[in-house]
Length: 64
Image (cartoon, rainbow, N blue to C red; front, side, top):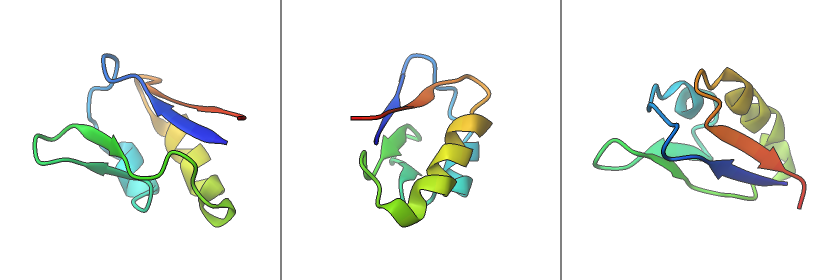
């Protein structure tokens, strides 16, 4: 699994960072940062929930 973000679509609502804080964060400019593009199995449910919660559909997962 690999996590991706469309930075053009991201409105930085930060909903995702609250759901998967070990994987997603905001940088000093307030932009979304993926801390781990291939998160460990124990975080996959949180990451999937973060992807589903994005109102702009700026996050997605590929099965690499």
